[in-house]
Length: 342
Image (tube, rainbow, N blue to C red; front, side):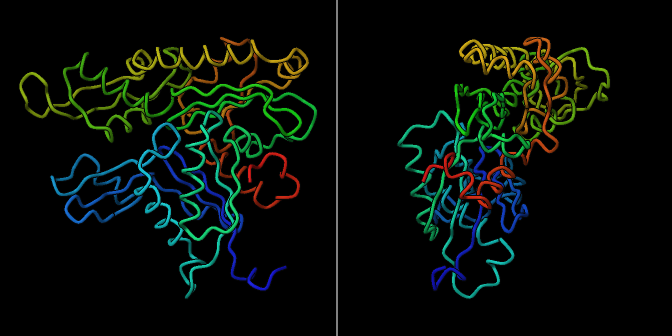
């Protein structure tokens, strides 16, 4: 143990397109939207997380809300750095310290990431006083978080549907045997709802309202056993320009999302077709595991099960399974050394 090790803090970060989660001392200490609000005049970041989300779509010309991550990777380097710095400062035990501690970080990244995008994540972490940085692929972290023993010589299929990307991977012996990353996920579902409301109801709505519709009546199929109640959606009438309200049912949203879910189904089938036969035999017995916020879409597990003829299981806490897996990898660095990229 080094002399300054007592000043070091270990944190695990799930840097997501929609939400950023941070684990410290085995607990989720930050769970906030990946949004920052910036003053256009001074260039300063004035709010992050929940405060910035409440400003979204309601700002004037001097304030701009930014989502620094797109499709699971850093799109705005400066804004993402400031956002992560702000989140790290909010960690209770770090906030109490007089001097900023050096950090050891495990950050999860999409499996389809390029070397340039990987470098951007590492540089961001370096600027935050990180002394040791490890990266872990999202499907691998999701598998650990779901409770799969990834070191076994056994095939397991994990689908992580996040905000920007859907990561599909077949994992065995601590490695990814075959994978597919598609840019179809929560953000695209939200855009599908925006488009549907414009074309079918002549109603212009904001991202926050579309997100609420997705959460309250979002569905992947029109045949649900427990159907959610219809909801009222408010926005601006495209014909008259007046504010108006319409009633929306889950069946309409299922229609709106159908094409995007078809693309996820095709990606799953493509991954299964590339899976080595021995691992395919294992997947037949173990089934498919779903993680990430997108897996909470009503009826998605049943729809994928019908398509693949395999049992599909949704993780216990799908929103946090990736960050939980990242936290477990951080706690057991020696055990998971083979799956971490230093």
